[in-house]
Length: 526
Image (cartoon, rainbow, N blue to C red):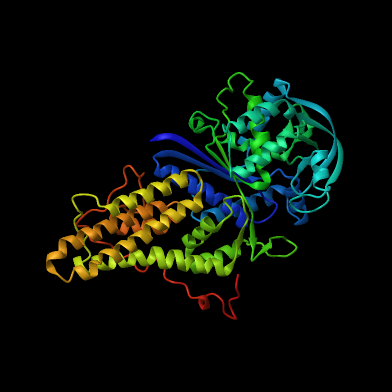
């Protein structure tokens, strides 16, 4: 194995049910981890729930439940949602767990010893929806309205413990401008740099509270650690032990664009402060932060007031009709991984499924396998002695897909992967094995053509495996490249298509979808 690879998602507030945004973030992390596996890296994927928010307490009280019970229920719902989408996580952290509370307490104690945490008075603006303190300049720019939920900012005056973020302005700018801390997409990095240059203020890291739900400041239990400081330390809680410390630092933090500031500015500054403490020199900064955009629905921003969130019931309905992998494919290929937001549109979903999966991947596979069954009784023919120009073109597309995937440019990775299947179809049309086979003397040549196609299908399946693991594993097993229910081996060691292997009957792969099967009078459009 090559170097360990650590991938994280945000940890999600348990004040409400999981929805498309949560699934999308976690899907991106799952794909990144699977891509790292294909490159031969040991991988660790962390997700979980953020439970010490004021909003969580309010939601529990509004529903007449103890906060702990509410958090248990909602945390289980998030875990089930991710498992439903075949997302493989190595740990699921909850900030209410004893291991996390002990870790946060230890790290806050260390920060206090550095002098970077002090008790002071805060007077300014607060975004209750984001649970974020807003500097006066930014509040004025926002017209004193939350840029996320459009609700008025709240003016607050209170005693807080502060972190000296202002001391880290120059180091943070150097890290970002020299791309030692890499933010994707580049436009978001430019936004963060511009905001840092406006000047950094020290930030509150605690709130006064009589609530016992939360982590108290060591030595001053009247103060609870501010939820975002508490939450950021989850990335360390899980791997700060002898077994997993080698995974640090995080290779990729996957986050939504609304929480980029915490991850690109506050989190690196906290880590730099902790490095001052003897024994903490190993606390290197994250390598990359992928800050994706938001989903809208049918051209409209999703909101509670409109009641148009794409929730788990909607997503599960699509999974029933198009399969989990078909739904993963649409989220991955059409989702807001770049600078722009993306539209979850029913018609586009169907168009994408039929064009890319049914007509491209499914038809190509069925076409090639069908000819092998007709002309060679389903047994894989022998390969040509020398690679052809077609083999080289497929290898180049495979390499391009790998490059884009490892750069977290998942939409471009998928485009290159689909190009493999389209190139196979073009090669079949050009070589016409269905015509050549009519002459017995062409049998060997036809076999070489079809072997090249089967070998290309293998590379196409590997390229799409991070997106559609179950379907691509089935495809690889049908070609003799994968045993039982195991995941594919890394590219360097993954089995080739074995000559003489009898192709397994996979059945229609991604059958074409007909709209009337979903939208009827008794079955409304999701």
